[in-house]
Length: 193
Image 1 (cartoon, rainbow, N blue to C red):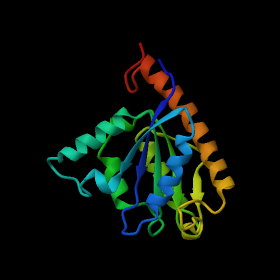
Image 2: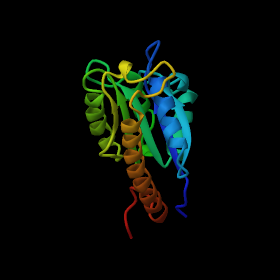
Image 3: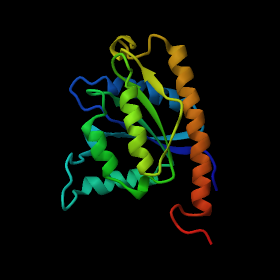
C-alpha cells in the first residue's frame, strides 16, 4: 500500500574542503523534517566511499550505495555548481546505480554564484532523464550562496527559501506516492499483460 511517509533519500554532493553544501543540506533537512509525509535518509557522497572512475570489480561501497538508492521512493540532490557543471563525484554516484533510479522522482536544491547552481541542475535533468527519473519542475536555488546564510547556517531570507522548499517537496511527495503505487501495481520496465 502507498501510505505515508515517503522514503526520501537526500544526497549531499559537494566535495570541496570547507563546503557550503553541508550548511545548505542541514537547512533543507530541517525543512523536510517538519513535514510528516517523508522519512529521510541522508547520503553524503564524501562518506559513501564511491570510486570516481569505473572499475572492473566494483568495491562493496558501490553495492551499498545502489541498495540505498533502490530502497528510496524519491530523491533530493543538494548540489553546488563547479565551472558551470555539477561535481564529478555526483556523476560517479549517479553511474553507481542503474535500475535503482528508475521510475522515481527527484528534486534539486542548488547553490552557487550568480546562477545559483541552476546550470548544474539543467545538466543533471538530462542525465537523470536517461535513468527514467522524473525531475521536479520547481527547485530550491541559492544565488550568491555564501551571502545567503548567516553564521548559524540559517537562510537570511527564510520565508522565500522555505516557500521554495515546500513547493518542491509537495511536488516530490505527490510524484513519489504516484510512482510508488504504480511500481507496486506493475513493476517498471516489464511488459504490460
